[in-house]
Every structure is written in structure tokens, then in C-alpha cells.
Amino acid sequence: MDAGDSTILVTGGTGHLGQPTVRLLDRAGLRPRVLSRKDGRGVIRGDLATGDGLSAALDGVRTVLHLANGGGKEDEHTARLALAAKSAGVEHVIYISIVGIERNQALGYYAAKLRSEQAIRAAGVPWTILRATQFHGFVANFVKGQTGSPIAFIPRMSFQPVAVEEVAERLVALAGLPPAGAVPDFAGPEQLTLEQIARTWYAAHGKPGHRIARLPLPGAAARAFRDGAQLGTLPGAGRQTFAEYAAMRAAQTSAS
Image (cartoon, rainbow, N blue to C red; front, side):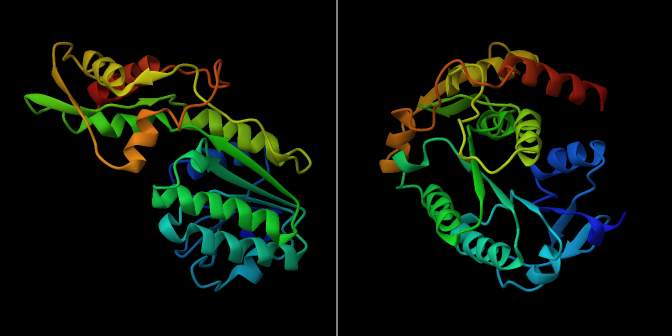
């Protein structure tokens, strides 16, 4: 089966979330086609920014998993995709969004994500929207780059990190179900301050005494993060804790 035979299209299929999602679809024998501006195995050429190749990419497709990160223009890309999917007779568009975006519209990326959700609803195509909390790797980026410095400066905020592979599992499960609208948020199993995340990361990487200074960040977006706009409810559906993720990454680093 080549990319042209699949009835599932994945945007962002080469990204952080897209890769494990595509692997799970492959294991299920679904062999999705991946929309990309570059050639590759299982790839069909197309560009969400211009619409080039979208008609061909959507030909025969029944389900779209929209995982591409369009940054500040994601709403434009999403609207273009949703309207093209409607025109092509797509039966189900599944969109990955972020928990709490309506509570932090000072952040441009979150504002674009909310507009993207609205664009999917307005397009008239059957849809499912899954909101997730931040991935383990995203929150680790706040701290891992400071491992070699004498002191780590950590913003005052909390997260409810979730394993990207578990979000991928949920997306694949949704692809096998009818369109469901806004489904329950997918959040990690625990809520942690970024300082707790930092101490967990440094301990796993052999630096349990690494010095930490809490850093206040100005602005409305940072205030929304401090107020917990990005947090889901407990217990979250995610299973892997951040400590387990940090230990796994430390073991991978040691083995390489």
C-alpha cells in the first residue's frame, strides 16, 4: 500500500506527536498518508500555508488527524484544511489542541489554537477536538538546557505533563470512533511546579543538588500560567509520571 491508498491523512506526521501517532497507525495496519512539503515514505506532498496539493492529499480520505503546528498562522492553515476536507467529503477531522487555551489568550499561539478550533466547527465537517496538557519533553526544555550552568533559573508556574505516546494512543483510538465533538481533556497524572520538575530532572541526571532560583516572569501570558490556566483536572488520564520520563531519558543518555 502506498500513500495514495490510505483513507487516513495525518498532518504534522513527521513532528513530535505525529511520529508516534503514525507508528501506531502503521502497527494497526492502517498505513496513513502523511501530508508534508517534502518527499518521503508514506508521504503525499502538500502545503497547508498555500493549499497546494490539498485536493490530491484528501482524495479518498475518510479521516484526517490534524497535528501540524502552524504557529501564529495555525488558524489560517486549519481553516484551509477544514474547508478542503468538507469539499472532499471527509467523514471525520480530529484536531489536537491544548488544555486551557481560552484562559490564556495573551499568548499568540494559544489564541491561534482557539481560532483553529472555531474554524473546524464552522467548516461543517464532522469533527473531534482533543485537548491535551503539555508533553513531558516540552516542560523538560525549561530545565535541561541549564544542567551545565551553576544555577538554574526556573519560572514560577506549574504543569501537568503527559507522555506524548499516550496522547498518540488516544488519537488513534479516536480515529476508530465516530466524530464526537469536544472530548474530555487528556492530562497527565500529576500537577507539579516547574521547580519540582527541575529537581526531578536534575536528580535523574546525577545532579540532585543543582542550585535553583525561582524566576518571576512579567506579562499577562505568564500570569495566566502562574494562575494554572494550563492545568487539567485530577486524576488525569495519563499514566507516565514525569519522574519516570526523566529516568528513561537519563538512561537513554547514559546508553548513548
